[in-house]
Length: 152
Length: 152
DNA sequence: CCAACCTGGATGACGCGTCAACCATTCCCG
DNA sequence: CGGGAATGGTTGACGCGTCATCCAGGTTGG
Image 1 (tube, chains in turn blue, brown, purple, cyan):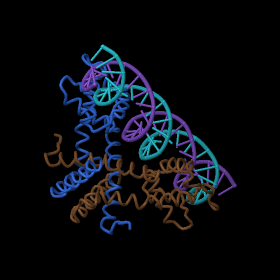
Image 2: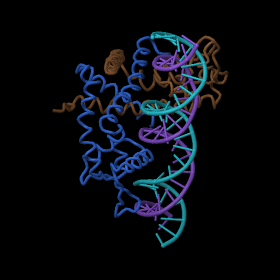
Image 3: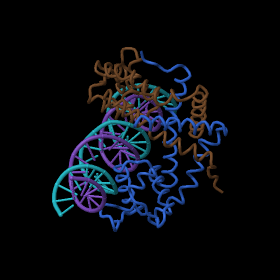
Image 4: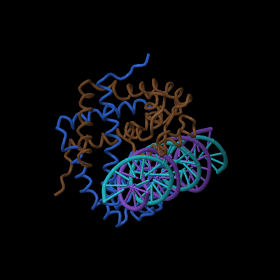
């Protein structure tokens, strides 16, 4: 016997699905329009900005961003083509690769960050109460816990 | 002066972003593994199942799903290749097109639906309180309102 | 009537994301 | 040692999603 969703669950689920489709799209458009960056670009650049010598090992980027390696590889290739980052060999480990922030990349994220965080404020936090913000965090933590549990 | 995110906002935001990346991915994998369908396939098939004569005008599907027309067109092309749907001309309007559910499509979603809703229960609703479910809906409605206002 | 406009839809290019396969290097253990 | 397993990374194919562009068929106003 299938457990279907009740009225309240259905409404919340539908609304959540819609938000989850439209919010990233809106933030992406804003970033793209104002700074020529995508959300994925932004995430990578943030990690590199916070790193010593503006460089991070690829596998560490994967860990920090929770990305799989092939995803990072593709992303870095595209960003390299736009000269936001470069790759460098690691001496001491012939397999490894550093992803290195370029000056252009640095400039791009410094320009983008304030506009992006402002958009996040406008679209999300300005309309939510402290309580709602707290609950959002709890919900996400719960679901993430479930996801981790499921993967064993 | 940029308004950065405070501690609580930052935690909620990060957790939300992570959930939003991993939850659809997990649901997609489940659906793909158990039924050979994607979430996008599922959404389209649901609409068609609820429709008289198992067919809906393309532009009505766009309205119902909040998709843009090119997205639907691409999706229908892929689904048609797998014989989940077909297209039919509309008599009375030479531009229009019906998207029509096939028997294979009908069988696919009937098999997929119970497993999918079960996964949604397991990953989301089983761990949330009624209050959290309600708040999730409120949050999504707030943000969707903001998004609509911005496009105003 | 017909030209301008609007609507419904398709297409191509590109970025994002996953999966599977592959390759080189390094590690580890018998 | 030497050979198999693990690690770090790349690549190709494919589905998803957006944007810009195009097109045919309708609609409307002068």
